[in-house]
Length: 116
Image (cartoon, rainbow, N blue to C red; front, side):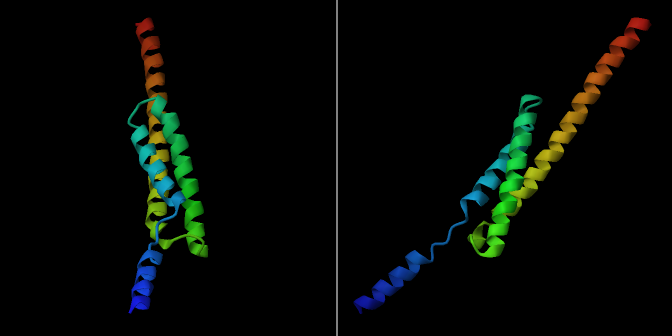
C-alpha cells in the first residue's frame, strides 16, 4: 500500500511540466516592446530592441520545442512573443515615419512662412 502512494506521488511531482524560460522571456519582451512604443522618441529605440529580442527568442524556443528539447507548454508563449515583436517593429516603423513627416512638415512650414 505504501508503494502505491509513492508511485502516485512521483507521477504528480514528475508531471509538472513548465514552459521554457526563453518562451517566457520572448513573451515579456514582446509585451514590453509594444508598451515602449507608447513613449514617443526614447521608447521607440528601446521598443525596437525589445521587438527584435522577442522575435529571436521566440523563434529559438519554437525550434527547440519542435526538436523536443523544450516543453510544448511554451509554444503559445513563443508564438505570442514573435507576434508581439512583429507588432512592435511595425509600431516602430510607423513612429519613424510620423517623426520624419513631422520634422519635414515643420521645416517646410517654416520655409513656407518665411517666403510669405
